[in-house]
Amino acid sequence: MIGERLQELRKDHGMSQLELAQKLHVSFHTVSSYERDRSMPNDEIKLKIAKLFDVSLDFLLGLIDVPLSYNREPNCLPLPRDFSEQEVEQVRNYVEFLTFQREKGHEKA
Picture 1 (cartoon, rainbow, N blue to C red):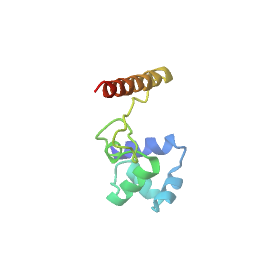
Picture 2 (picture 1 turned 90 degrees about the vertical axis):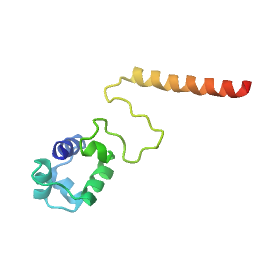
Picture 3 (picture 1 turned 30 degrees about the vertical axis):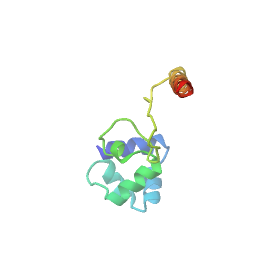
Picture 4 (picture 1 turned 45 degrees about the horizontal axis):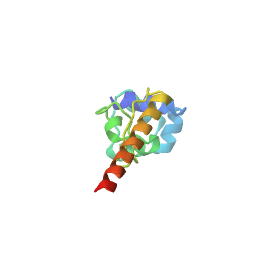
């Protein structure tokens, strides 16, 4: 699974296997081996990959399908990638509404 995710991330970022190898300080053949699931990166390399592409280790390892940010805040709410701008705006509006309701409730107390 990690090989498929790594290849997808690399291509999404317009990066060649050689460029990725240079960033990870490994050989081109090592990256190729990772992507074909012939070898598994060690934990240090997994962390470098997660930081480089800003994805969680859970996503990289295939445990989840939503590419959460490596640097996410604890209250971060991931939205589906296929949400339209309108749907994202609806979520923002709902959060504002909930914040307003909470503040209104504190004023009554």
